Length: 112
Image (cartoon, rainbow, N blue to C red; front, side):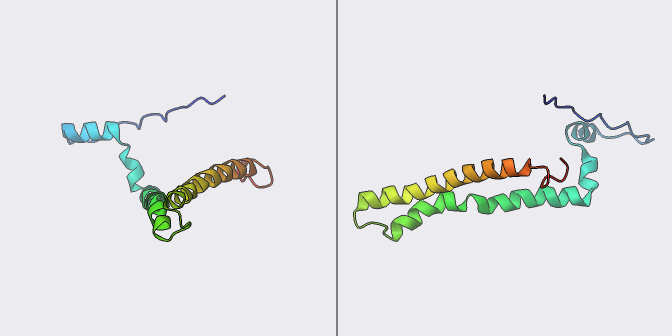
């Protein structure tokens, strides 16, 4: 059973100077101490940067395949080009299932 648990709120800071209302609201919405951690900052910026390249094939593959004819018939050429995107999606799903199961194997899982 998975029970999500939120971390306890940070203890109030002992500070003599009053904080601005905007800063108080920002600290309630975003846990700013994470952004002082160098590893977190690198991770938080690297994931979106890596995802920029993830969607490029989905956007451009069909038009690229249409431009290099896969079939002399124009209609079949478009169908074959669109099937390439379906192949990417299917193999991605299969890979996620296989490697998900593989990550549960005791000799492979580090924290398992």
